[in-house]
Length: 360
Ligand code: TYM
Picture 1 (cartoon, rainbow, N blue to C red):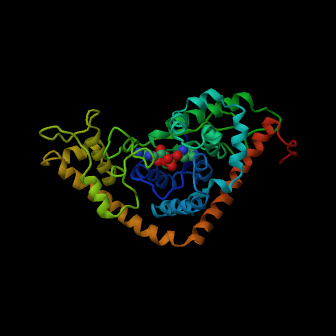
Picture 2 (tube, helix red, strand yellow):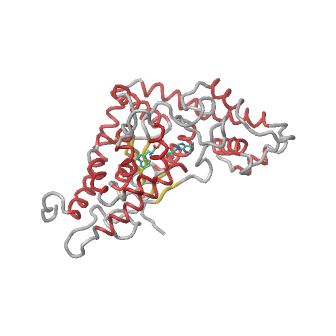
Picture 3 (spheres, rainbow, N blue to C red):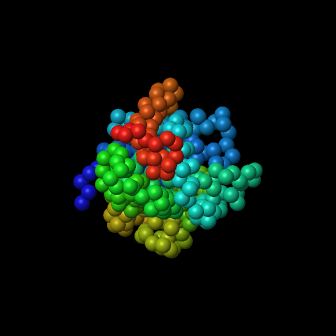
């Protein structure tokens, strides 16, 4: 048993169009993590957002939107570290240093790279290829043990673990030289310089599906407009999207989960998460329901009830742009203090820059 509290890290793209999948798969776990993590670190990844075509004038606004959403969802800057990736230069430097142990072929085989490069109309940037290395740097810079994410990030977590293992094998700690991990015992991940992180994927809600095309994940880039429930959607819009959700043509309707019933399974799972119940309990509760209509109404109401207070807090928090900048700046100071220590160890191990002064 590891009694030491884990270092928790996760990242999220800057957009005002965060959806129910982000909320259930990730944001809710961030909020739970802030009292378990020591520390729990959450990063809005503006550098990752530059890997596809984007509007520079909008990027800062979208960072503010996402910061306000996270605060409205319950992140408390006193209990976690919340910051913007681009404010901590150590991420970019570590990304570059990690490219030395990252196989090109592995990056070219990543599903996200293949999908996104195929859909780019303008330029397939080198940044898109290096995206997973920057993501690895995000986590490894903090020697995080645990990374709360949805199912779609599994491949990114695997390559991140591989990069950490390759780094530790290529640049082993030299015993008796005073070189090594600074900053105490992280508790897991072997005894290499970098900690090999574990993903933390929720058991229910790891892959919230599009309400119109339930064979696909809910997503603002690849999903349908009507099948994607945005956290900032009006209550009437949320109710309508659930009422029109695609289920199946079983006659009579069968209210159970199963691989053959992705639409119904999705609705049961969402309702379970909203109620803090198990999907089995929801199936039992719905056993006497007349049809899918009852289920759709129940999920729509539960989601509206969950999101209404979030939306109200969002409006107040988002109005104070300077307040958001202050939160991000304070978070970046805390983040930098941790990342700087790892970078000093990595540079020393790799022979980059001047040798470390004794005790430094
Ligand atoms: P992003 O911004 O696309 O998504 C943020 C989080 O939401 C989860 N998610 C979902 N979960 C359940 N069902 C869905 N339909 C769904 N869609 C998205 C994602 O799994 C993610 O956890 N590459 C990352 C950002 C990142 C990062 C990191 C994550 C950058 N550095 C370091 C972890 C650690 C991304 O684009 O997330």
